Length: 364
Image (cartoon, rainbow, N blue to C red; front, side, top):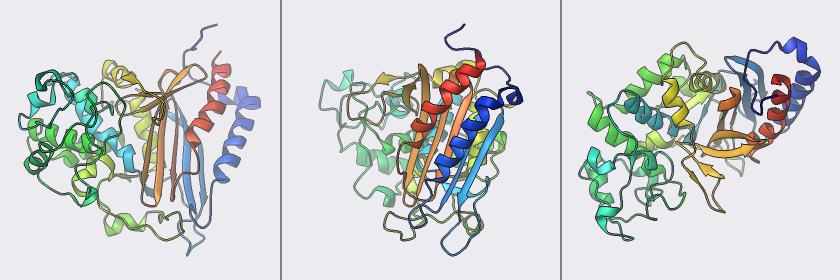
């Protein structure tokens, strides 16, 4: 009996004694997270291979209506957006245009942040480091955060007067700036029109079939959104992150995240990346010390082990919204959840602890 059985097609009707109680548990637990004041809408799903086997949409779109959300309701996905710069990076690697371990200075020679820890020549910040929270770069460009909207050269000029927070490859350190900078530098070097958002639209959104996903929240998009709420119950402002858009400005729906997960599990006919590159993307980069948000860091994943399976998780939190996309690569299993308020707990971890043993038993 293999330790990790092959994630083959399952006839769920033959396993109703396991699946039905499992999905009932999932329904009860996710629905219980709705808070009419601070988290009135939740949309979630469970994906196996290329099928959505459970959907849950609970609560109401906002406090002024009783209309519930559905699978296409739009939420801001915050740091789940970091998948998009990572996909650009790995797509360029897939095309043979770059090495993941290349020094960022070989892509843009203007990058020359201060390196106080060792000799300048010995401190290489690689592309993979930047996509894996392992570069030592600061969390933000500056204290103004989302108000920063400089050009690439203006950003680099500012950064060159800053210092690394840690030496590269020594500590897991969350950096929004690393992903925004990665998107900006790669777009400037490799995209003919230098348009990161356009590349994402063509090569990810349209390819995957994500009909309710994008960067810019227009009035039309806003009409399809669940209203986000702050912890005190007030309506969250739809703040544009400007230069930081690649790190956190995307919006999406639970259905779209399910399609993206299918593609990243190699289960769609039109994959963004080759199988070899997908396998590379799901490899842990480093083990993180006590106090970090995950046991291991990946590109761009927070990675933890659950019941002997490595789980790749990407959480997002922004004013009035929280989101999680979770993939178990060796099981072709994904859980996704979007909430119109702050997360009450690590929902995905709780779900994985329940779901993985059940599916492993079925597959065996």
